[in-house]
Amino acid sequence: MDFNGILLIDKPQEWTSHDVVAKLRGVLHTKRIGHAGTLDPLATGLLVILVGPACKASQYLMSQDKIYTGTLRLGVVTNSQDSDGEVMEENPVPAELTREKIEDAMHAMEGDQYQIPPMFSAIKINGQPLYKAARKGKEVEREKRFIRISKFEMREMRGNRDVDFYVECSKGTYVRTIAHDLGRKLGPGAHLTALRRVASGKFNLDQAVTLEALQTMEPEAIQARMLAVHDYVPAVAML
Image (cartoon, rainbow, N blue to C red; front, side, top):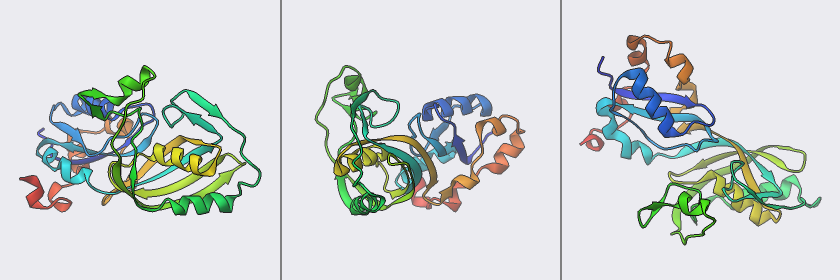
């Protein structure tokens, strides 16, 4: 079957976005598969997969805003800004750092701004991904990127270290850098311990299917799950 459309996948933890694409090439027996926005291995949730002619919509769909839920831990700073990295600092969390003060700092980070991408990223400088230099302990100067944080809210605080949050942000925003920067603003530092993408543009995680479930489906059932590109992408974006 010649598949064509948008397939929403609930990415499992520890898988890279490339891993998911490679797996789907085997399941769907086609090489023409791409995605509209990567997720780190630590992250789970909505991965927008494009199959067949739908791959032309990649740039348009990548430009959409994203929504995440996640958890950050105060008092611990890592070199990757998430729990996959090495611990660089461990600091006490002051008793006076109340929930209200943390929430105020989160809201203060909302709006248009520039973000410095993390060293542990696939961004290329002089043809080399930054993470290769980071693994050697090197720090490379990076250009700031314009981003927008539309909403940054606390959902729950567990103890005095773990903060569950909700964030709406523009494309290209590193949520682990948001966690890192919040920790710096508050004093003791922080890193990301969990992240789940729940929406990307008009797509929602409720529409997604797991890889396990997909592998049990007949080709006709898989095609039936695919969303028609013309329902989400203007014709001019497909030229």
